[in-house]
Length: 509
Image 1: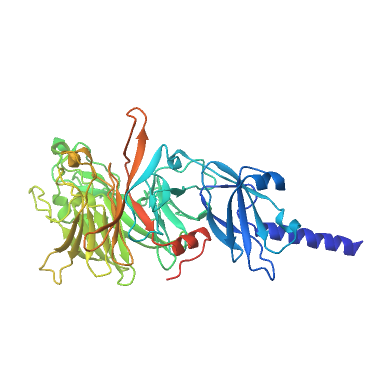
Image 2: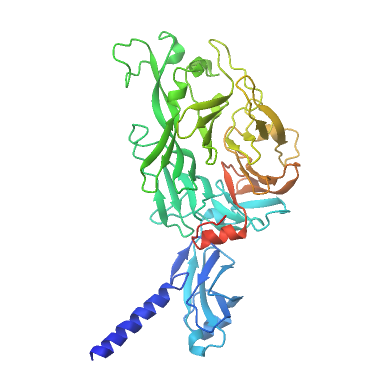
């Protein structure tokens, strides 16, 4: 009797173990159409076949009548694309040369759907087919989806435990083969299935507030740490307490005791580096640089609020090899180079503000939304060109000065374009915010224009466009497709990197 029970327990455990090796798991509800199928391998079996039917079936005969796809594979795992979101599927594995009984196990899953992946509501219209990177995939945050280079949605963001995931920013692949993004005042790392692997603590340890005011950008570093932008409140001393344009003055929170001067609380940027447990490893506060600097001379273009300083930190790039950080401040038209981990400012690129003098711009970039240090040593900037409302954004490459007496030198420029042929196309769309660039392995650039015309494209150094596409949404009241508003986009550069995401494997360089 004891032996019989032991055998039954062993068989049950073995059966459960085999089921655990089958993916997608029975009854899974998936947020993607490119699916990683895996199953137990069989000794002396070198060929397998995965068969998929559209619909839910429990008998062999009904399943076989509705098979829509058969895929041969040499190993016990393969990534296969199914046709549609919002659909039920049944599948099985045929072990070639096995008995009929081995081919009867039917498994079931469903692909979920959201309006963003309904191609009658939202789409990525390819303008120019891929002449390079044709096996790449593109995250488009305005459309809330991951697309292949033909413009087909293959995945949408999902976080287990949350009903809806909308308005994400900075979706991108990490060196770990995972996805990071900022969602409202939270920041996450998830896997392909939506399991939360890491969540920023957002506890105010750096800001001194009750939360960190996360924004714009989250990056997982090669050492496994996480770096993110935040904000803190700081006091800015005002020159004249009687000037009516100040209208929010004498905020005494944190004001020096006995100081009768007028102060105004302003939002200033921070950069925070976290360990994998959420501990603060390093941080930098722009208040230590801006308060008491030439920025005290900045005057807001709005005469009714001329002392309102909005530095608007909106991008960073950490050169991990050189230990330098580049941080963009949109409203000041300035990029700051900071030494890591010391935190001292090595250089400030942009206009220097003079007492009682109006801002004149820096002549190179205005309202920029992205900066990065390129492989050839230049500083790449996505220039929103906000000072020139009749112009479109630019991508510019700047040579950093060799000495403090020199300035930035523009060595390359690409003028972004729209597909709108009307005379006022540049005035129809706006790029007051959004946009970014990513340097690709061959030094080409992947770019998102952001704003209300958030075209994504790849351009090489010779200014040849290698691929382009336009995110669009259908407007039933106007009965036409219109450009979708976007913020940032990113690219998975090849299928091997995409496989790492599907199987949740670390990327190998």
